[in-house]
Image 1 (cartoon, rainbow, N blue to C red):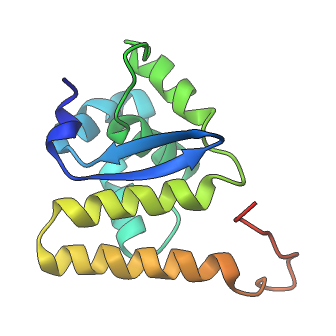
Image 2 (image 1 turned 180 degrees about the vertical axis):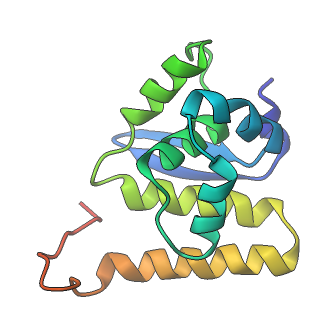
Length: 140
């Protein structure tokens, strides 16, 4: 049984499939070398309502996803598999699911910080473009 199922889970959809993510510190540590970046720093950026680097986002998703039975055993292949899930139209829901999973796994005070970041991400979906950039409808 995947140890992430022991934690509280958040979910996001890609196409007609629902994926679940959960926070487990050891999985994040284990994925950090393969991801070639600081994943804990990526979580801190998310907690502050920011955007982690692409490597951090992909690494966090790979570390936190509740893997199906046929999931690749090698971390490098897992990174590639989750990278296929991260698209323009799934970027915000994936980011929100990671933030939600973290908010469910931590103390009330830190969880509140993650929830505030999640609300900010939700607001971005419907907010006007910044600096004249074209609007992107992330709900498609």
